[in-house]
Length: 331
Image 1: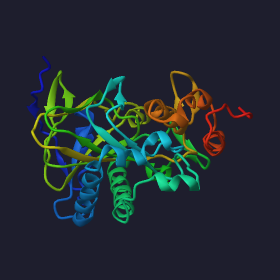
Image 2 (image 1 turned 90 degrees about the vertical axis):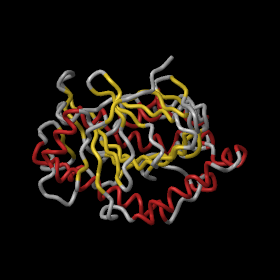
Image 3 (image 1 turned 60 degrees about the horizontal axis):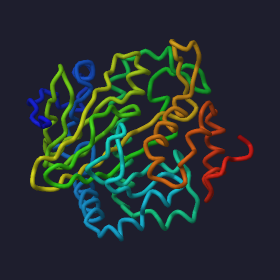
Image 4 (image 1 turned 135 degrees about the vertical axis):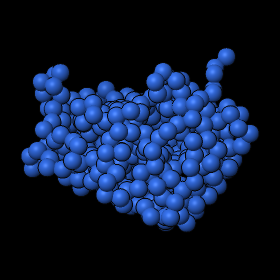
């Protein structure tokens, strides 16, 4: 039988408006890759926006299966939409359901697809802007501690990490975990940072010092954790940590994740391979790997993306997913 018990965390709460929080943030990222962001006064995201967006998320997941499937990700060419309990993490089925969203320029869609997207606006647009601001503030604190010698874009080496966020790329999910056993398998996040807004049900745990530690919900805070790409780009200074969710309570659990991403033109030096690569390509490939089993339009796309430049990836989006999964003739 699985042991769902975990110890209490000592993860710090970071005030992003405090100029002296960088060291505490770095220490948290070094130790377990997680920290809380203080929003108890609505100082980073308007509390009414969060409440309304959570309400809309719950409203969506309470729809009938038939109605939710009208927005199924399998109909999408941009990997946007609903996935029920057939989703997987590390080849382990989720006991949850998700609605996946992306920046329009990350996985471009076509006009005909708009009718398949559920409308979370205007709150979603406001929320995205606020989360990008959170990301900006976090990197302002981390900037003095980071080494940029292995990251560059079309203008040369980055002088600070804010130089890598001009495109405002992001991806995110709304998640619903049913009572008494809703789960997501242990995993590390793919990208840079994950900004999580969770309700008060609990269930998030991080693997720390050979044991599971509860990342308990604290009202009006965000949970931020480091992804695999940021661990790599920071030469291991920032730690990507394995985590999971297990809802053992008799009530539903709802959460929202938001992942800000670097510009498509950024590339990183891979010391082990002695070459520069576009992490954007790696990210696109990883997301297609994660979601392709959910989307009829992405079944074989991962094979076509290997080694492509950002321009080729963009061209691929625009051509390969226009209602067909046949191999593009120019690849």
